[in-house]
Image (cartoon, rainbow, N blue to C red; front, top):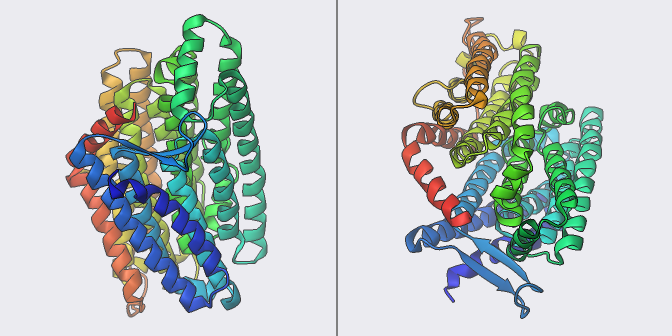
Length: 494
């Protein structure tokens, strides 16, 4: 066995252990330990990606001494390695960029708990990426929920407490539906390992038995994860959760949490139920409809906002609609476009929230559009970062969002069906709506207002924003590398 096979499990367990240790450490020690561990886990994730890419094969690591179908397993291929590496990079940049705001937003006695929750969050994200056991996935879904609620409410004011309560209610509703689906699936198949479930589901489908229960199982798991990932109309928790959190929490929640749930749904589609079974049950058609509606309604809601943080939060509803629309196309090309959009959106949205915090800081702490006039001049780097993220969301060439929309359009054109027309029209309308509210915001922050010196910002925040800008440009210019990796990883994923 190659030593790198241990890295996925090491990553998950070390983050869990670090979360416990940080809870009893002083603030500075907890910060140092958290940043150091996330950096180490990033290197381990890079090692997993390099190993799977160089060998061209995935690997399965058996935990303990019990083989399948009774034991627990983790599985890693190119797609898992790339997603884990990306999650680690965004987590690290978000923590570094938002560190200076913790002193203002969070009591000093609670800051070690913030780093503890961040480690628990990263542990759950990596577990959802790597696990080959569906019940283990559910356990870490709940750990993710608890960590996310803590990251939202740690500010301790009324708005953050209300936002965390709304998130908890909706998230537990989604978790309950997911658990019901897993319970029924175990009752039908007798297995919890994804590979074993997949084999049994194929036998069930070929025999023609349990057709109605299988439809109910698929529906429960899809709706449960749609609620947790904020697919319209299950998005009511999202604007407050993103808008009233600390900058680093907003960056982490908007870019990583919903994407981990979507990745778990992808694993259920391909590795648990089977893509052909999903297509036969017409679930993709339903996801397509709700994805299109989300693209429109999320953008319309964003246009109506006066607070720019709420505007960017509602934009996430539209972008999640893009991802589900790609799944709804029912083709591998659509799935590839959705996976690319996960990378693109996560890198851009975290940068938008961090840059908004910087722009608000030089605007007397205000994030209303009317108060941000000239903010791009008062903090030039934050203005460039926000503009880069906005251009990517709109789909301007040279940025990742442009590639995403090209991929979605190409996937739709290959279909030659009603979905093609609907998708192309939706992409065009959604792009115009995106341009409406993002160009309005960019024009506002670059409208001359008054002479004012650049606001001081920390070196760590500046370095993180530069890294985010580079990441967004990378997805636009070197997209061929990413797309090829996704295609290879998805073939390995099946």
